[in-house]
Image (tube, rainbow, N blue to C red; front, side):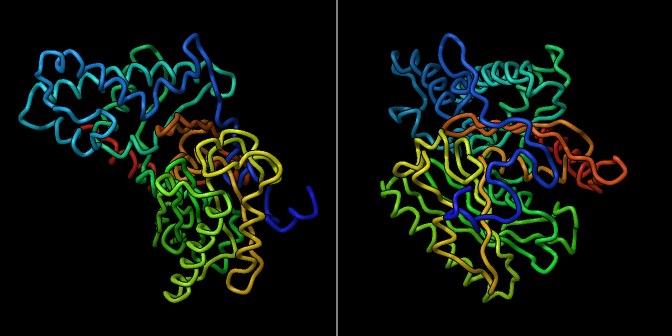
Length: 377
């Protein structure tokens, strides 16, 4: 590691395969077929394309219940309302789009499960913005049924937390447990192609040492896509957001750890640079000439009187890490994130003392009860 990178983290490497609770077996796997990247078949945009295809025949006859509104501009809430509304034709269109999308998601999941990295996966959680809707939950449940009907012994479930919160809460599991001994919260950053979200995540370790009760105390979001900023402007804005959160947390009496966990798209190198996959971020973030962790340490050298450590990992990995406390009854599990693209990561739980996995306490029972309620609607 170069001398100018020293100090961004003294606890682990960026993009590490070994984290405190899990081994990251793979992330950002890119599979191809004759049509291109397989993941593109189950992205947020893919669902909108499917919806558009189902609308076309009705539009030609002048009977499209959605009128002239473009498919990509119809909100998830409007589509959710259509599912249970009085317009049976509109409801049928949304249900048809959900079914076709579920078939595509099942195809992508099937391809992943047949790779060496994803072999013997027992459970998959699905996050990303698409999950934060009733239509997303139905698509996930339908995909689960399709895979089981084909003999795949895997459970497909919606991610437990709201995806926006999951991308921040997961940052807790980038840090070793000792960092929380004198602190009750951390700073977390979730960088996306449209938004940058920053937050203060409370551990609530006094209520649940396994961090199953962790929550986002406060967060700020910046929709950078509309501003089209330069890379330097984006880093300055991010630094200011974090400084504002530090001030708010200190005023509230929270004990912030001198740690910032970052979720970022792409393949993250050990030194904190981004090898590839950051094409949707403002400016050129890829290559050795730019290093976000170093930039943040320069902008925020200390938190609470202690030197700042920054750790960055792939955004799909970090979102998946929010599920760590609730995955202690399985050994191998993964995450899919449905957004602008389809993110993916596969994990194996690390063994604790005496060869036993850590106890998830009541988290798994609570999760199972919640999943049953969700599926019953």
